[in-house]
Length: 471
Ligand code: ARG
Image 1: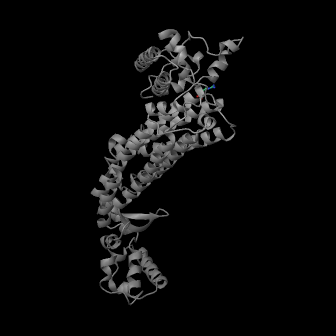
Image 2 (image 1 turned 60 degrees about the horizontal axis):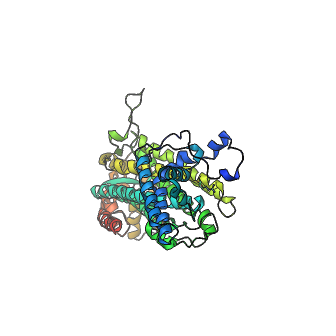
Image 3 (image 1 turned 90 degrees about the horizontal axis):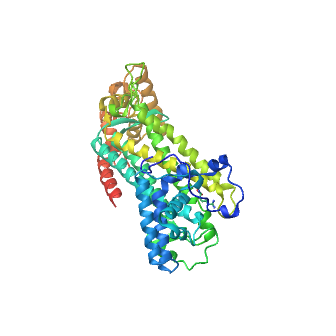
């Protein structure tokens, strides 16, 4: 945990707020079973920000005096500093981050602390906290996506002319440029980025004011609170406000898709870094060795990212399942939203960070990629297109080239290494100029249109990509 100063809950001093209604104490196991403070304390900043806005709003509408408001503000800021310093005693008896902070406030400033909860409930409080927390995290995620996209753009520009085999079915298909391949992943991330930007709009809506479920009898000013907290909108319906977790599901779905993209990319890097492909070398600082086999350099980072995709996909299913049986409005089930969400965010941010760093240090083995492209008859389609230009119907051209490839396979030669006479035995339309289209450079340069793999197009796409991420 990065900024949460997490602590083991200690023996509590404070009383439970609902003691009035109860005659027996909570069973010790139930207390631990129902508590969320061990994990929701990570939202302490947002909980305090929400309480500050609420107290200011209550003073603004005359429910609290300005002296009471100021005392609450001062107390909450002291508590914030104490938590940040790791000096706060979290109590499991006080169940969650909300009641821990409220009880600490009353300990600190006395009776005024008990007035903070006027006109609100933990139900609208927790929904507000999560939204504030996710809003901040989305901004971090967006920044990391951009860092990775930038690394890919730099790599694409550097390797705009580098030729590799392009694959379908993991069989060599046609030559492509390495830069073009990197920009394909850029596009995946660009869609991810736009999904997170869009998700943020629905996260940044304020539930506060819905109270437990029906609203409150106090003359609250929700626009005031929303302005204080930087919310772009206010939840229109109090029942929906406390029970909606669509935004959490949506964020997790976006994260699962992004992780799925990184997982696919990882699969390529793992293959490419193998001795069999030898297309790329990952920097030593992103690999580990084997404790028994001295020759090994393992691509642990992409492997782990590929593996971690599973848990994020799992969290998406957890959250969907969490919500599917819930009637309106708030149910305690909702407390189960936090751990999957938090782990999703940690996993996604970690994966993006390590990827952005790793992709800045990838070296490319041009020779190995070139050889692989030649070995795989990757210009066969170009020969077919050549015949079509000479008037041969495509299906016939396909057959001619198939025969030429068979000769190449049998004699262990690439198409460009066959002689003109050998080629002409399959079609008399083949002339001396055929060798121009059989080169890898000729093949990639010929695909010179928007979205094509030609180096010229890659450079133009790099330029556009830079503009797209800076607007
Ligand atoms: N810890 C709770 C949660 O995470 C806070 C809201 C509890 N509200 C209630 N009425 N028990 O959802």
